[in-house]
Amino acid sequence: MKPTWILAAAAVVCAVVSIPPLAAQQAKPPLPKSQVPDLGRPTKVTDEQPPFSFDEYFPGRWTFEWDVPEGVLGPSGTIKGTIVYKHLDGPFYQAETTATGPGGPFTVKETIAYRKEGKTVARWVTDSRGFSFQQIAPVGGDLGGYFNIYYESAPFTYKGRTIRIKNAMRLLSPIRYRNLTTLSIDGGPFVNYGNPWHEKDLTANQSKH
Image (cartoon, rainbow, N blue to C red):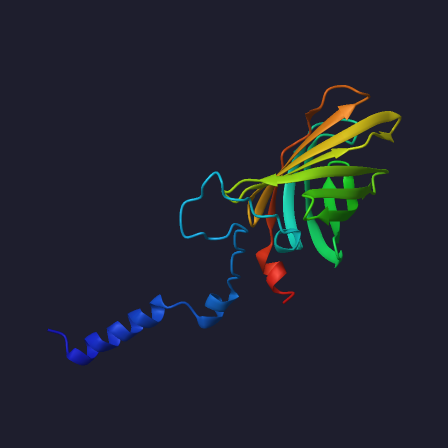
């Protein structure tokens, strides 16, 4: 049999190895919480849907990859970039996108107004590729914690074509949403322009606190 002190030393080493460093434990940022309150019971169809909080969801840095088809907005390929959302004042917010696509780098700036009590949001979008447009959307959701924003733009002109853009933003978790985008050209039907996922950079958001 091995001496008792050897067994005790081995147990201490195993315990130390199994415990991650304190710095590593503290470095992991907490996950954002769902905006649906815990009722302590299953939800009912008569339960009131909680209002969507723009402040709790969007502010921070988001990353995305977007596979786009060839069209009036540019060549086909993959767009990669980041969006930084900030609260300005009252119901007003700002979003700035920095991205690189098959046509080169570009930026997008948005001014957003959200009426929580009216469940509506509007935004003014300026794209460095040479166009700008306005959109308005209803904000909906369900008792499962999913929210939807259905943006629809006014017609705008780019490269001699009349364009309308719809964005169906499906907020499926506190850290991920999907942007289903469709385009109409010269009054034609709306066609798919990609369905990118956006993911919140929790490390970047934590470093600001």
